[in-house]
Amino acid sequence: MVSVVVEQITKTFGQQRAVDGVSFAVEPGEIFGLLGPNGAGKTTSIRIILDIFKPDSGSVSVLGGPMSEAKKNRIGYLPEERGLYQEIPLERCLNYLVSLKGLSPAAAQERIEPLMERFDLTEHRKKKVKELSKGMQQKAQLIVTLAHKPELIIIDEPFSALDPVNTQMVKDLLMEEREKGTCIVMCTHQMHQVEELCDRMVLINRGKSMLYGSVNEIRRQFAEQDLLVRALNPIPDTIPGVVKVEGHNGLTRLVLADGVSPQSVLKALLEMGVALEHFEVATPTLDEIFIQVVKGEGAQA
Ligand SMILES: Nc1ncnc2c1ncn2[C@@H]1O[C@H](COP(=O)(O)OP(=O)(O)OP(=O)(O)O)[C@@H](O)[C@H]1O
Image (cartoon, rainbow, N blue to C red; front, top):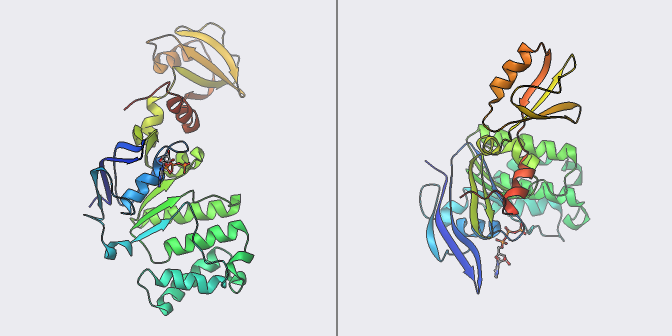
């Protein structure tokens, strides 16, 4: 069963077309990136998926059909605007919010304790939420998102305010959830996290879907006609099929002539006696692809 199917959704606020014909599907056991610049329509799309907004047109299926009150307890949502009660102790706040997902206070407590331990929050459990640091509050919010063992997790900027150690901890947790077959939809502006974590993605710009598919496939589509090589002996200046040879971060970048394949250049290098240590087809980072697409230089539907 596909966890989320979004088909041709549109939403307009006044004159503003916030979402304009966006479609995508997310399977169980995958981490899916919902990406786009500020104001692209990501939060609006999430709110439509969660039935907070009705779309003007198009349809959404969540966990096998339309959203229902019962289904909301099978979803974990980490919203952009965080919703912890600031004036009460952390443990009470967590227990209350997790109980809202259909667990008894005792069952909620059983789920919360190991997560507080894992997130190094146990010693802070008696502190009022407002006395916790931003990173601690972020971790607490993640506990609320995950403790009821949702089948679908929708998270907006899960790594905000987290240091590298906590970021890694959250990444490990998300990868464990994926292993268990949970479906994870993640909004983030941190493209290197998407490269590391996401299986597939959609990139929205001005409400429209610009790129959709496997992260690796999208990166390959944008691969340049360049090779990055390093050798034990000097790399010749003139190589058949190569129009430019230049230094690049400790490697040598070979710019290929139109229509020349990386394999033919590899063969030429070996025939010229180059002792290769490193050979790769230069793949742009998602950051570079994001900027290229959003600036309108490489838009693909
Ligand atoms: N409730 C609303 N009323 C009016 N306009 C809205 C409303 N919610 C969103 N918009 C507009 O819709 C567009 C998309 O906003 P949205 O919040 O979905 O973007 P986003 O991709 O989540 O951006 P960010 O990365 O900055 O969070 C923006 O132009 C925004 O001003």
